[in-house]
Image (cartoon, rainbow, N blue to C red; front, side):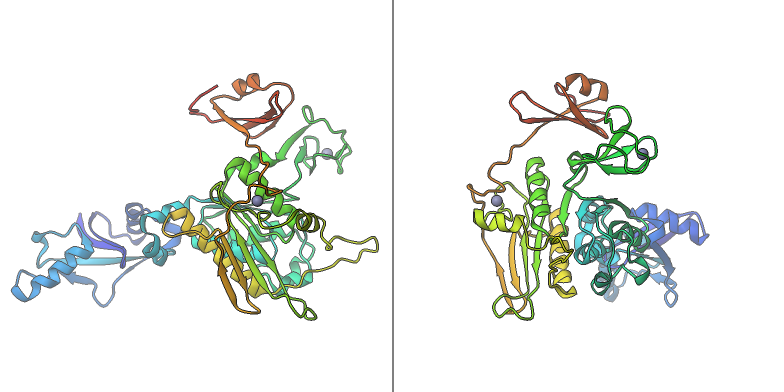
Length: 430
Ligand SMILES: [Zn+2]
Ligand SMILES: [Zn+2]
């Protein structure tokens, strides 16, 4: 056994007893002691002051000793005059620990659903993954096209025609190996099933499997793989999409299930447009009082946005949105910082912000929920129950029910929905 001093500089140094000289074993012991992932940590022994000497008890050295004892846990009066080997753990998130302290654990445990893997999704995924979140599921139905490359840090020319969600998830996994980056290729507003004969995943409203032709029968030969019930798996949901309909859908689901929702709208100025500007508009819903994307819009405006001019016309002409990377990275930086504030409780969280980068107008609104809002005023919350076994859940279900993973959902007599969640050590109620 020898006594050493080790830790993360400016965060936590400790006097410790170890019984090894092997660098790898020592690193693993120290990582366990400080709660760090060994694969994200390097260890160095200070070369020029391989040993530090705690000042002996002398009048002029007593202040220095106080400084040491403040900064190094476990030092005692009896350590005066001793030599210690000094090891520094260079942790991947050593500087972030200085911001969030113990709350950094909450970032490491965060599991998010990110909808949209375009330019904004690339920036958001990069920020959140490098900030240390634990898991991310990325949903997008589109493939990568050439104009995406100018705005997307993770897409290369060789990725053209590959699914955005898959390429982004794979690149994020490479960037931060400790994250769980998952993806789903499809439209978040649809429900998906998997054919048990050939494994193909397809939309619930198709009649036969598009791959092997097996006739659709949900109870017998298909299983649900993605449905709105999956939303309940996540700590929060982030919209990185460019269309109002999907944002409206996500807003409704998050309000229904009380899931924190981070929404941002982005618009670029057309070169021939004399008035409008480039803007970023944040509408985050963290409590039932927060306004949604529809709260400031009239019925006519909502109708207009729901049926955008951007859809394909019969000749295949598509109206494209003007955009550039700056707007995307401003939006992603603001949103990822809000998410970290929210999760760690280390700062306030914006619910409403408007930025016009053409006129350089920055406005934090104090918008409140509109009780007449076409989108959020009529949302009906389901009743969520918890039981300890799927068997019990199924006996409680009345009539036809949807099952996905550990949840079933069915309609009540009055039309409201009931969701039953099975949790193994279930705090059971019925
Ligand atoms: Zn099939
Ligand atoms: Zn609203």
